[in-house]
Image (cartoon, rainbow, N blue to C red; front, side):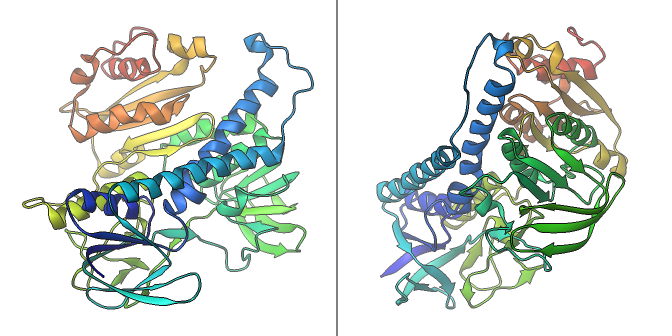
Amino acid sequence: MAYDLIVIGGGPAGYVAAIRAAQLGKKVACVEADRAGGTCLNWGCLPTKALLKNAELYHTLSHRAAEFGFKIEGFSYDWSTVIGRSRKVSDRLAGGIEFLFKKNKVDYIRGLGSIEGTGKVGVIANDGSRTLYEAKDILVSTGCKSRGLPNLPFNGKSVIGSKEAMILAEQPKELIIIGAGAIGVEFAYIYNAFGTKVTLVEMAPRILPVEDDEVGDALEKSLIKQGIRVLTNTKITNAVDKGTSVELTVEGPKENGTISAPVCLVAIGIQPVLPGGQEPELDRGYIKVGDRYETSIPGVYAAGDITGPPWLAHVASFEAVQAVEGLYVEGHKPRKVRNFPGCTYCHPQVASVGKTERALKAEGIEYVVGKIPFVAIGKAIASGEPDGFAKLLYGKKHGELLGAHIIGDNATELIAEMGLALDQELTGEEIHATIHAHPTMSEVIHEATLAAEGHAIHF
């Protein structure tokens, strides 16, 4: 059967591309080796958020019940049910994507896809059979997988990646996490909330290295207060997997010597998953694409994590739509990613968009800072969530928003307004002229904007 478009990979880039192309009247197939939704829906973004919600609820009820007037006797949890709820969420969402495929008449092909030249895709099914499909265009969106350490390979038991961290049959009493980016920090929060003794090891000077320095410092203090052992600016000089435990030799300002735990989660980053067959031109291991998301192979395009950073589901979906509309919408000029929000869903949450102070200083851009703590916001006090702050960076000359950095409750929801403001080059004057409902957490944006102008009302 010949198609207009075959998409290899069914994650946030792949399934979105397939559905959008079908909406534009094209005959489309989506090839997925695992299950519709890819890593994000099955082993990443969504199931981890289910675990994070469980962790937040348990931590609140076990540590703060009296604060809210609750008396709970014999309070406990069932680990298998916690993990099971996460998997049910994943199953429901993946099933939803399969329904959307049917609704939009996208052919869903289970198997391992490969590029067999211009207009040809080979698929190896689970039973080993191989089928060759033809299409006018091919879009590769095979994504990435967890990157391991050469001297500490994954074994699914004592050395695990993020996938195994979501489905451990038994909760470990102790856990070492290597890497304090978003994935490492989120799992540190989850396991610590349920009572696991967590040690978080990071080579950089602070956790969440890509975030604003003040935000990283504030989150580190919060995690330490919650009971997590945080070792920043720390190198691992030796690693030994003993099968039932892992021993790391570390060097840093807080620890020099050997640390050990029954389980070690390696969260140092990800690596590309290339399709088989003909290989397009690569850039540092990722597929190189042009302005229209085209690869070096005629008729083959690529979008999402497989094309390199930023490795974010929402960026992947954006790129997929741009690539498809560039192909099938007359006159459409595909956009490249310019501004994108980054979110970390621990508690307190972290979210940002645009430039950090560190970047503005390095580029020599003059700016003003508006910073307001959540304790100044009535809704935050009423909700029992006064920790954190919003920090907005505005251009000194024209007053346009340059960057937004939030740590606190609902930060990952609040950042959307800042993304719109940044994309539309709104000024502080335009943002503070926008009435923010009272009482809401969003008032922290209004107040931080006023603070940048030197006349905050509530702080």
